[in-house]
Length: 140
Image (cartoon, rainbow, N blue to C red; front, side, top):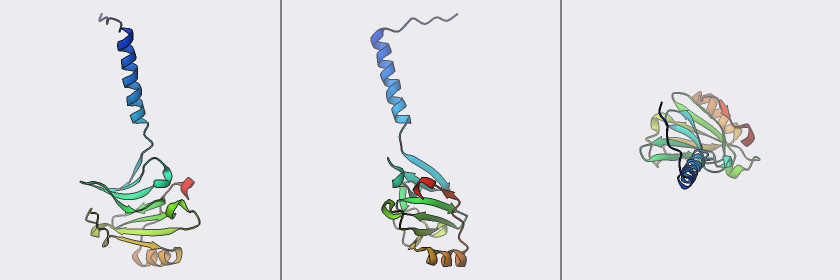
């Protein structure tokens, strides 16, 4: 039988503080949802900060700014809908051409938008863009 000596009061208190600190780290409000491959839906402290980024060697590089509330993807494209500055009276749509995305800060060849609803419907039909398959209802 293996018996361990009880901890002293100060040592036990120190252990409790370390465990509490580690628990706080684990409860971070940072959100990171993988869309597909290197594309992620991320937010810092608030859900209204949701944006799309490309997770590469230099970290997660922005692709579509906040507030993104819906995304979709296929092998060719990533699509997103957002309310700029969390203004739900305005909706903008974007798409990313995956083959043109080099994972750098220069997004000019890969990211297209913003589009209004009618213009995006035309582009969606023409390019056969994927549906917005993941939605965050609270942000919609």
